[in-house]
Length: 224
Ligand code: DX5
Ligand code: ZN
Image (cartoon, rainbow, N blue to C red; front, side, top):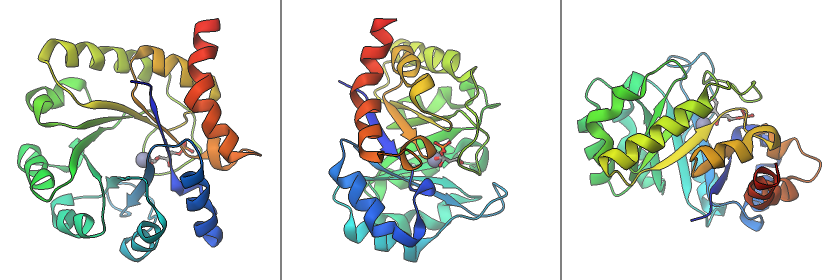
């Protein structure tokens, strides 16, 4: 399977959201990545239900919703009703992660868990078989446009090894500071989904940038 690209709408121009959602739809991107922040789990507040429901009306591609919020259980049904395909919660925000993952699936969505850069992989070892997506944060969550943390590469490799050893089927997603400089290495390390905000939306040609990340990322890696 070739890797997937999920442009993060956090970096879109919110005054032209329809235009930017249409760009993602036209492009070779696979998912819309939607970052929800509550000003508690992370210092920033992004956007909520009314905005996401407007996005959903214009999106055919799956919505990959990343909840950076405390006690995400409160909103599982609401995100299912909005039409989210994937719902990713933070392991650091879930006291009863196993129950939360079950509730996400029960509501008809794929269950994802995100790990902050400092959070060790063993924190999800007991739920590996319950997961559809593992999102490794390659920046401290809360803001777009931050610098990629290089130790993520080794973490991706170790997670791919863990998946093999345990027979899990989850996708490995990497989120934060992803762009031309690291996309090839990440795919080589075992990443299945690259989330890209600034590198796509701040590019001169966002659609072309998605295409590069989707295809040339591999070529540039093999050419090295
Ligand atoms: C960070 C978010 C990311 C962010 C990525 O808290 O989870 O999805 O939008 O943006 P870039 O690609 O600009 O780092
Ligand atoms: Zn995200």
